[in-house]
Amino acid sequence: MSDTPPFTGLTDLAARDVGGAVVWANDEFFGEKEALIRPEPPTFSPHTFGHKGQIVDGWETRRRRPGGPGVDGTEHDSTIVRLGLPGVIRGVTVDTAFFIGNYPPYATVEAASVPGFPTPAQLLAAEWTEIVPTSALSGDSEHHFAVESTRRFTHVRLAMIPDGGIARFRVYGEAVPDPRFLDAGGVDLAALTNGARIVAASNMFFSAPENLIKPAESRVMGEGWETARRRDDAGDWIEVRLAAQGVPAVIEIDTANYKGNAPDHIVLLGADQPGHDAGSDWFEVIGQTRMLPDYRHRFRLETARPVTHLRLEVRPDGGVARLRVFGSLTDAGLAAVRARWTDHA
Image (tube, rainbow, N blue to C red; front, side):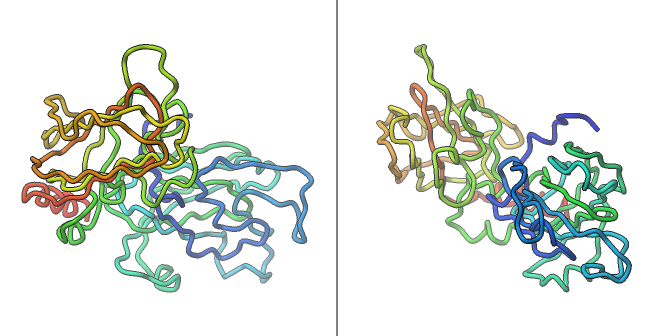
């Protein structure tokens, strides 16, 4: 266990802002289960009491008593999280921030792959695989655990032994989309939901590059990708590995909420390099184009060639809320998605 293992740089598959949800807990008396997957860091305000006690920013259960309320016959408390992005889990973080006299001494994590729209009862009856064995926790600390399994999972179950409070739960990994939906045509090739990922960025001073391809709309400036102010003649850029090889038809570059700090202009480049994390032989997809602040720019590509990567260059700097790349997979791209699905089944 290290302070910042490499897997923490991957996507949090369980985060609320990518569609994650906490669907069940046997108890949440002091702190609601939904707090576990809030994307923002936990906070604490001392001496803020509600009718159940100190208000906490995390999931906290009552003290277990034999036969008491909240005790369901097990020897520990647990909760089930539906991953917003089903995929391969590379590591998890259990954060007990601000829980000092009330943290659980141990935790364990299991995962399951359940198709469709299962109810909590169906999930409880599902077949679960242990991905983090029972491990010791300490108070007010982040605990990182690597995961060795290469299976695709849809849900995780976090158990704290026997009770207490956990502030945040992160599930880092790589999305593995269902190829049946990518075969339908008209998909967003750059969507995090469909397996796209950010592979490089020149600057990430104000906000994370991954925001650029997250689902849903950007609500505030902090939910896009924004660079620091440049004082030279160069520009900033970000590279996206698409879900698989595809042919783009419509591209959206949205500067929503960036009013005094949108780029002056952009250039969009493409590369076709299956199996690589970054392109090198770039060609122009959209030539130099002036950007407007707080505006969704849409481009219809009359002629397009297959791409696996896109590089958005912003000049000289600024913020972009979302990049959408609507198109279709090539036969080779679809075959790659199907192979990945099979490899992680």
